[in-house]
Image 1 (cartoon, rainbow, N blue to C red):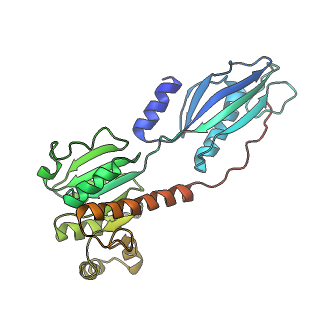
Image 2: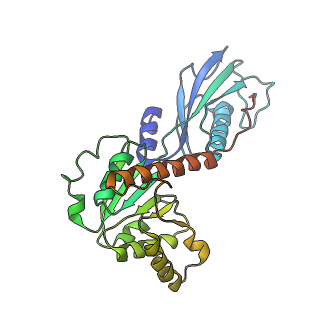
Length: 282
């Protein structure tokens, strides 16, 4: 697989990677300017020259992946027998500058449980974001292709799940998924809250409904063993404070804005500054 195919594959799988490009060459070097490779968490594709040059680039790229870096950086390496090296000597006599670019191939996962009026209105907003968008409903008719027409072909990647027992679909969602629970049935909502709280690896858990509904749910969830800390993971009512409208469109706008806040907070917490790329020699 060449570097271009690798970028596409990472994008389809929603996995992180770094594109490494030979940006400039002075003197002799194993590859010409413009040569590229892709570094993933556990694999690499194509080559920028092999040896210490490439091993150092891979090491730095994985350091960027580990800290969630989002900005590109330059790494300059000298290829002389007097230069320090960690992965074998290269004596081409030149100097290579590499551009390391973190790829925006990893997508957040958002899940809507219940594709009724509010769920569909919310999906029509979230489809414009670069996310994996999961639509789950126990009612097959709610997921009919003609009803979901218009959701495909936008920025989001759509995943439709007909799940007679919705909490079973929840168990298969990726770690870190942010979800909103707004089914047609309070019993389904309660079962989903219980199942979601049994997965500590999930992200935001939002529940539609009134304060009275949550009082009842709290009692039920405490009765099956959930602690106060567990219950604090559920956000209800959902949506931005201060928006009072109750139409599906208004609720959807409010919830979509709240989810965008969650996604931006995720991006901030994932990123931690990386020390500047060392001017390594090899």
